[in-house]
Amino acid sequence: MRNPTETIGNLIDKQSVSFISSVDEDGFPNTKAMLAPCKREGIKILYWHTNSPSMRVKQYRNNPKACVYFCDKRFFRGVMLKGSMEIVEDKKIKHALWKDDYTMYYKDGADGDDYTVIKFTAENGRYYSNFHSEDFKVE
Image 1 (tube, rainbow, N blue to C red):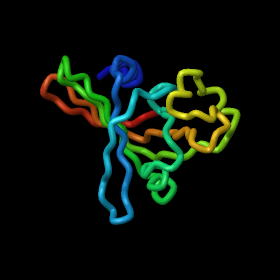
Image 2: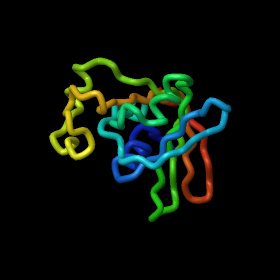
Image 3: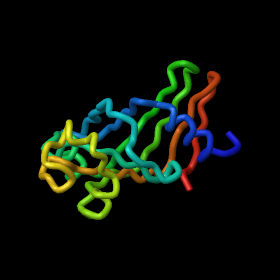
């Protein structure tokens, strides 16, 4: 892979579903399907929105280790990114990511108690394509 940021970024942008994983209190991985990230900065930083009382938010507060996965089932390729997930408390960031369509999930809007933004910071990854896997560092 000549340019991981471009190759992986294109794969991420074309997916409507993503998978995020957290670690539970017993040390087991927990994976959940989510919508695509609401924002990405290269492949280093990804943001999602979720409900504040969700199990995932609690798990990330207890253990920030995380993994995200994107799969292009049409071409049977995918990427796993490993890193950490943080709960965004900054109202400025939460407002910047807010879209009016989100009211279907969060009735009280961007300032409501139910709206939470989570921020993933990737450290490294593994890309699979054409029956070949390749590890890479995220810069």
